[in-house]
Length: 223
Image 1 (cartoon, rainbow, N blue to C red):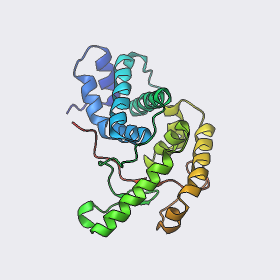
Image 2 (cartoon, rainbow, N blue to C red):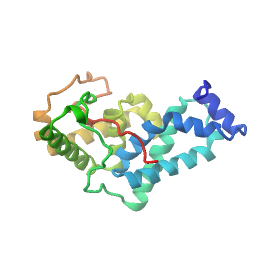
Image 3 (spheres, rainbow, N blue to C red):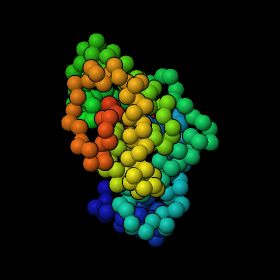
Image 4 (cartoon, rainbow, N blue to C red):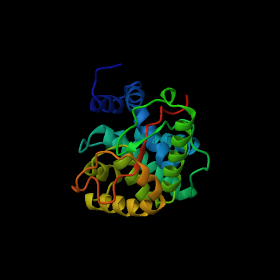
């Protein structure tokens, strides 16, 4: 892999380096896939959303002006592509849980255990918790879901999410707050039994109500 920075790779792509964009995508593929999958709700739609976003980024690379990090810009393009596809097709989450979502973790943190370390009973409980979280998340309006995925599940700062979603910081906070309030009723039993994790203070990154119970990042797109 090249030692060039993200910005250098994007500039090289704009200048005609045919390998630069592929290298940039490979560098951030897993994280972009995780966001697309959790936003869209199933692997097939996530693959389409991610592809739409990468095609848009490939074609619009010259519009990047450096106001934000390249990764922030890429996430913004992918999330917008996913939201556009969801709005157009009114995609809802499939009932089946995506196979490549790993074990449910503690609230506000990633799980450290692996499937190999859990007995079948633990795996069954983890799968049911994942299903509850994802099914509840699917009931939210698209914009609230995107904000919660990026802030609570992916751990991005609110200010950076505001850039990704092209809205004000206060809008992200409001979407997260409304989304958490709605989820609190749907996930009350799960939150009551969750062992908990370190919650952020009320500085805007974690509005009152607590973060969405997290799932491990998926391992990456098929292929």
